[in-house]
Length: 536
Image (tube, rainbow, N blue to C red):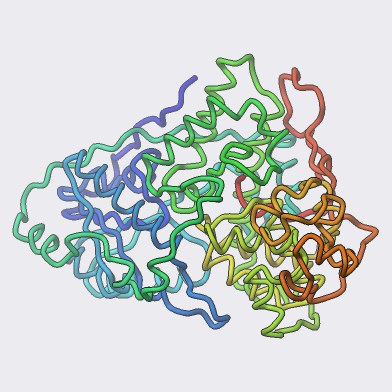
């Protein structure tokens, strides 16, 4: 099976003197479109650049640091890894700590081109506009190439502004009606040897940072810097392309064979792929995961429910990127893209209780504490804590999205905000309201996960671990966990719902026949459902 993209044609593109590669959320060498644009292939000189934008580390209007410590650390590791890889190719990465619009035109110089991956959301597009304005003034230009999704938009049977909704409609269109193919991988790039304008190259290098900025330089306080990832976490995540490819190799060879059965787990490294932090930062491409999975199928008797479901998760990621391209700023507005008005609370006590895992609902608290301590939370957990915040506490959903943006290692603006606006029931589809009691019983029946992250509950018997407030005062005292003293009282009275919110373990079953050769289009997904928080 061929995995490598044919060489890009360069005829018809005028050679440019200087091409700047502006890396953003594409921190890798493999399968990276920016290396293969004709203007880069024809350039006399190529200058790779990464810019730490100080705006990404400021406090947001909702009270969170836009990029939290764990994600900033992961990003620094990823940039360092990219720099090492470029040096092995005879190039280097010029690193800056500034606004891109204040740097790129100066780095590029006149009659040059800056090439970057295309983004679709408002903040990134505003920066693009500011960069382009400065480049035009210098008689240079900005070129954006698509490289963030499994399926290329040009290959789809619909334009992004006519994206079929909900996800199932898009999936059926791709799988059943048109059978869109995934493009092959780009080859390892060959960068031109630096020649001519040696003085200009030296000037750029001298203006760049000697190394990635420290957390302190990015604005983190000492108490934030001292925070270490909790050893109870599922995986010691390390940023960078090399770590991403190692994880891909490990999971494919050891755990892909049972993925569909285990992906709703909560404890341990291999219940799910956990590719999402590397996908979010572009350390691995979705096509690389796809072709590695196809390679596995070829050597293991063909497609299985497990390999199909992993690709299915990559399709969810595509859906939210296309969804954000279609709906623009509507995804970020309180009323959502369908302009649905609701009454929302902004009660700071409720928000802080939720953020800190002090709601008095063990299932919610355990997930929120894991996020705070590690920068990670399972897909199952994310759907539940989102539902709890917006449907039980009735808090403005943007506080939840903002908190996730700050803390998640794998924050991807499209997947995060697309999922939160859907969780809030503002996308026009079915409202997915989860029953906390049922979800906890289905996915943590014995309370192992809850007791791991809420150790004050360790003495609570299994039958009461998810509702400890139901124990008598005497029983609470007997197990050394008095509600309201050792563990908080519920901030709202828990309710039971007729609709379990798709919470049963079979709600997204893709069928039972593991020997089937083709699972396309056969997964049972709730009609109208629009949530899947990350590529798990």
